[in-house]
Length: 407
Image (cartoon, rainbow, N blue to C red; front, side):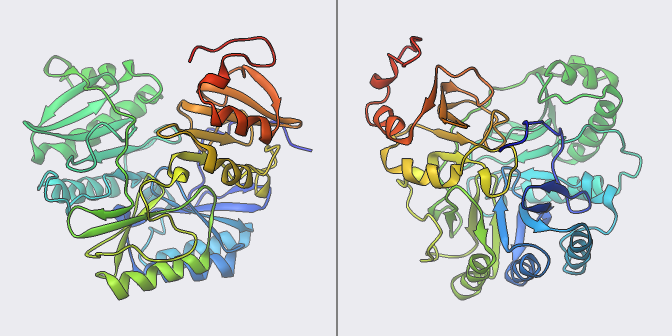
């Protein structure tokens, strides 16, 4: 029996745990997306001591731990603060949720002044005691170009490197901005958006309103387009780095321990947690040969999104992680697959080529759509889905319920 899906409108944090079917969830935000091997060992040890030992990588570059209790969540937060991984102040911790290009500072083709901008922005946000009232899930991103192209990160305010300089993008408007002015400009925009009580990621018109509050609307231009095509972060990467990704589902704390050991053995002792659920190893020539990691760019699991399913969510109707693994070999080349435990679509809020939504009697099929869309077919078995995948998109043209979907 599943509970009725409900969108909570916020994400768990270090000081704001969220209850799930397998216990409470907390998240760790690696400072500027970077972890030392010692800090990774600390997280793994705390995951076993305070939770159920399962760790997920999120689309915001966070580590999410599962299976905690209210008491153990508080103890976990203390451990993270002691390890230099978080602030003891909940408001400060909430403000410092930057989403960063994973190769900032190491990709030779990325903007060279990106690290200085990132540090200035992080310091400005940490000290912004008057910044209150931002909506839940509000996020600020910095894109520095290079191998990871600008336009890939989705955020309410995006600091984006261009060939001609930097842009501060907010909703549908973008302001050319010198590097030294980026941190104060972003902070002023955040204050303006707090007064608007909305998110430009959901309502792009809020960007114009925020820039107007700053008296800078006439200096803005139309925001450049975004892209959904993220580069592969497995294998050799620019800047003497290498990457490995997780398949759908959580990893055991023991795997994080092994990853940390590899950082020291083969790299410089540091790793980066990316929004693509991948780990980048700094100054490292070879990805770790560890079971449970994806190290080849042609692995179809890199194109699959799946939530925790019945392993940890009361809203889910199926073990979507196991089903996603079974379907992976049949996924057509270049196609993306989202296997969702319910219509909320937490693991992949944007459209996928093939979206499957778990139902009590099988799966609903939403081609080229989101989990919240109306399925073109319902009650599909895994065998029927495999047949559809093997002939995609030809086998989509005559669903059993009589509807049609163009190839």
